[in-house]
Amino acid sequence: MKKHYNAADVSIDYHRKRISMDIVIDDASYDPKKVNTNVPTLHANLLFKNLCDFLKSCLETDKKSLAFYAGILRSFAQKDVTLTAV
Image (cartoon, rainbow, N blue to C red; front, top):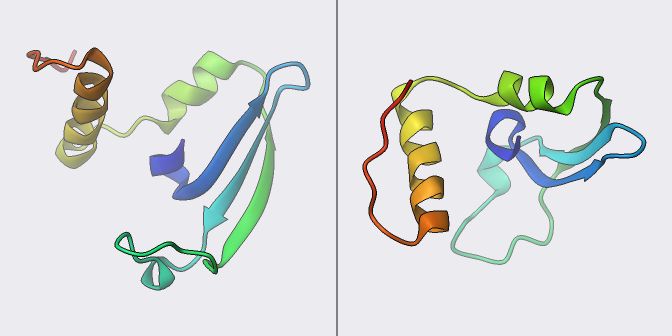
């Protein structure tokens, strides 16, 4: 969700079926090399019916996104594994 919505902070309330996030409005003010204390964001509170369907709708299938997801999966596995897109 962070990648799809360009969100700085995401939390899921499973009981109320809501997703709360702060969406970064201006990427130019964000610097990954510094601690960013003043990044303009828009707070969003989204309602979902089915969390699995909502999360699947956030997945992007371009090559750059697939490489990003593969990197995340490798970091969780803590080893270099071969991943294939299905």
